[in-house]
Each structure stands twice: as C-alpha cells, then as structure tokens.
Length: 138
Length: 368
Image (cartoon, rainbow over all chains, first blue to last red; front, side, top):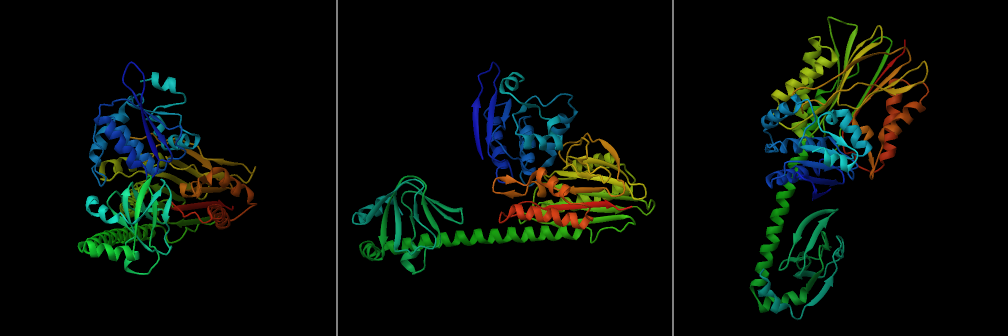
C-alpha cells in the first residue's frame, strides 16, 4: 500500500490522503501512523481518496475508524490496549446528527462501498463520488 | 567494518556493478566468496521476505568462506551498487595483511546468527499463540448442529493460518422450546486477543438471548457491553436470528455482517436478507433494523462469513456472484450437501493461494 499526501488548493486548509492498494492487516497501521503524522503537523481536515483502494478488510475498518478519531484530536490508542480514549471520541461522533466534519471519503470502489454500507461506516463517514464536491464540502 | 579501513585491501579484488533490482545470487546457488559493499545497498531475502538491509561498508555471503554449503538466502541490489568479491584466496591474503579481519568477520556472523535466532523464537512464539487462539475458538463452537423435526442444519468452520475469529452458535431456550436462536459473527483481529474477544461475545450474546431480547435489541445491548468493557481495538460483525421451528417465522437483525442468502423453494428465488445495521464494538450506540421472514417448507437459509466471499485467487476474490452461482446450481440439496458444494467451489477457486481468513458456513433447510 502507498500513501500519497496532497495539499488541496482551497481557501480553508484541506489535505487529501490517497490510499493506493489494499487496506488490510498488513497496511492499516501505516495508515494510522500517517494520519497521526498529519495531525501532528497541523492537518485538521482530511479527505481520504480511496479511488485506488480495491479492498478493505476488517483490519482496514479498524484503521479507518482510528484515522477518524485521530482527526478528532486524540492520540491513537496503544496498539495493545487503551480503548477508553476511542470510547470518548466515538461517543461524540455517534451523537452528532450530521456526518463527521473532519474526515471524509472520496470515490470508494464498489466492493469498498459495500463494506462501508454493510458495517454502517457510511452513515458516520461521508462518502463522495467526485472530488470537487468532496473538497467543497469541508 | 569501517570502509576506510578495508578499501585499501580491496584494490586487487574483483569489483562488480549491479543495477537496482538485479540479483547478486540466489538461495541454493553455490557460493565462492563473500561480498563487500563499496557503494549502494543490498537486500538479503528468503522466500520473498526481506531478512536484512545492508549498506556501504557491510559484508554478506561470508558463510561461503567457512563452509561449502550453497547460499542460504538471496541477495538483490536494492540500489545501483558496487560490490567487491572476496573469494577464499583473497580472504586468506586479507587476513595475512590484516589479522583482525577474521575476528571482525566472526563478530558479524555471530551478530547475524543471534538476530536470526531471536526472530525465529519470536516467530515460534507467534505460532504458538495462534495455535492457542485456534484451540480457544474451536472449544467454543457448538459440538454439533441442533436437531429439530422438519429441519436440516449444517455448520462448517475452518480456521485460517492467521486466525481471525469467526463464531457461530445455536441457542435454545428451555422456556420456549419452539424457539431456536442462530448466530454467526466475525471478529476483527487475530490470535489469542481475537479468540478471547470471541469468547466474550459468545457469552454476552447467549446471556442476552436467554434474557429474551429481540434480535435488534440483543445486538444493541451486546454492542454497548463490548464498547464499555473491552480494552482492545476489536470489532464484531454479527447476524442474530430467532427462529420459530414450528411456523418458520424468523426475526433477525444484521450488525454489519454479510447478508445471508434466502433461497425460496416456491419460486426458486435467491435473495439476500435486507436490513441496515452497524458492526459492533466500534460505536457506543448503533442503529440496527429488525426484520421478519417466514421460511416455508423447502426454503434454505445460508449464513456465511467473509472468509468465503473474500477467498482469493491472486488479486481476484471469490465474491458474492460465485457464491450465488453455486447456490442456484443445486437442485434441492440438503443443508450438508449445499455446504459441501460451496466449500468445494471456494477451494477449487483458491487453488494454492493460502486461506487468509476463517471460513464459516451455517445452513438451515426446512423440509416440512
């Protein structure tokens, strides 16, 4: 899996992180690490371009979930434990009426969209099919 | 070894340029000497796994100087590089010119050996942990399918090498003998933590089922328990159903799990069950719909985990389309026959590609 970072030319700062390749057990931790690096460097709005991500496993879901919580300003938990931090953040995420404002998805492939729909992630993380609309939504 | 110390002694050594990606030698080749990296970087690998990354001033292939065995690993130029080849004759000359050379080489070999031993110990520990995880999972799965007059049940579970954590269960209620609860679930993560999480989920689901919770309520309560109690980042997708074996009425809820297939005998229609529902363990509150269908005589219900649809052949997935083809192709199979056909199809598709996720199938058929 490759991760490509792009700073969008928008009035408000927006970073686009492109995921190329499968997001699974072997790559989800790299994604989390990159999200944390971006947050530490000041990124607060993140558009995940998953147009070239053909597959997302259950471990990939964990990665995606953690990226969203990282963009809410919390450290990802210790890989061995520490769920209490995520619980606090997901409580905030889940009580909101609208989608998460800080992290969105662009052009998931059909299989990935299906996973997002089945697991309910598509009701928490907003999905866009075209880049202009996605960028304008932040 | 410091480069500046060795370079003067390598003036007479054969120096070869390798382009990035070029193989220097393969595992199994006869070795005639060692290499000293003058410029560039080299990967040492075995069975596509990179064991070591070497840079300027480092050596590799030194074991060929000590024994007459074939190369134990493959060396590939990671970048364009220049290597000085030191065969046994040159090595003898070097040790005469610089007596400490042999001792320095022994230190390198000893360090490498120690590191490989540590990695092997870690690998074996991980294998043991995975084996324990598999044992825990197997011990928690039902020993056999239930017996209910007029119904046919089949269940199959096969763990992957990297154990994931599938769960299936049949829960009966002594106070309501006509009711049979059916569960299929898939835990994220692997190894002992996933197996322990599976054990926890099974207990919570069984308790809530015996408390008489409806399917959607059960999944919501299970989710709440998991989110509050668990300390590891693990999720669960689950399907829970309460089946009345007398009427065929089945109330169900889907918590982010693969939608089961329902094949109707009356019209031959094959469809996936509908109903929105989020996976468990990720969010404090989840939205879960509850629906009801009636399984008529001859109808079949096929529950599965993504180990089936995400079985791989290279980059290709088995996928729902192939599963539907297999189901539709069977005339009027028993639950066990259909289970076998599906598994045969998956195994035939995957061929030599190793199974990467647990495979679980639960099939119900109503005969009368």
